[in-house]
Length: 88
Image (cartoon, rainbow, N blue to C red):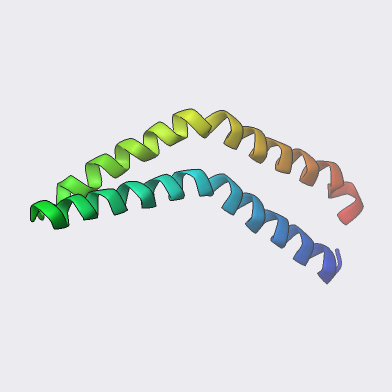
């Protein structure tokens, strides 16, 4: 396995990881921002008020995007395993 192949696999791995994590992270950031704005306007500063909605939003995003995420990871794994004999 050459250095170029290792770098290529690493880039594809990082890209796939970011692609799969992006929906949950974006939804978590948006919900966190909305909760922060709500807390700033109402002056309610309870720690659990920010965690519970974020956890629920991430769980909901995993239910909505879970099938797509699984398909992306399976496609990446299949490509990696199909190219494995040529890498060794």
